[in-house]
Image: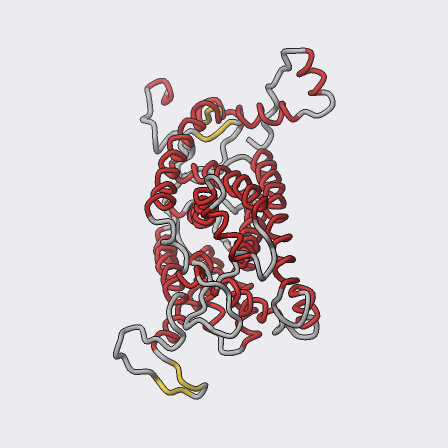
Length: 432
């Protein structure tokens, strides 16, 4: 599929003129006619869902920027004015705020699908790496956007996260001052965050184009995880349009229904109540937490007793994803045929949910109310923190130890010769 030739033929003089100067129509038509494995399931629809989420965030963000005032004395009031006085402002704001959560739901499922089916393996390494770049930019964009309403959690979240940069030896303090625009979070900080928050979605859109380009060059993976040779493309593939555009469209409609449930019936469910209180630098909230989609990384940060060590561990949790194609030593892509690795993957899913839960807890909260804490050498280590460190250890062991070792030692199940074997019965003609 990586060598699939263009079948587009310009039909009008305008198309021919355009095709010789900027073949953007050819690119779109080639993508629509891209030979796509016929056995793709609904886990492959999240790419289209993510495209819808990105467009929604960019469009609603542009409209919100027209009415937002990036000033510490007026930011919170401008958000309230959008909600109350701008026509449809409440809807635009809730779509944008909940759209961030929907975006992360889709991207986490998209990445877990790639992890389970081995979509990061050769020749698709660049597809995975560009996807990880997009994920990192999404986290940065979401954090910057969380600060803009200038509520209590916005201000104190910015205070905590930016302080982490100061923990970096030598260069941390200069970078911190540059990012804040001064020694403390103030109006210059808000202006910088607003500018970067407005810019980064367009950078993400550019990376999405690269992601699709890499996908077009390497071809799509499939649930079986085997490459489709040229002589079987006619039997094992279908054009992306109309077969998979219809399938993606159905999944997008279901996803938008879920999106609408949050927007219209419980728009504040995924946010924090303290962010509806104006920022007050003199009053610290009882519990400073990021949005839910950053909680696993926040838990990893708090699991390390050393501040700089926590920062390193948090960024390493994302950085390890970039080198994943070289950590997995198995020659089999799909975990369908790797029962041992599948078991550890299921444990990994529980660990990720556990890290998210731990990140939302108070630092001194026990796992079970009334459970005693343990006095260790490094001070008071409660049962909650012990569980967080256990989850953090498994997270890194999964990538750095289990993937390399299990790939070398496990015995995978027999793999079909073609993708048609698991889904189509053999016919007499094929046997002959």
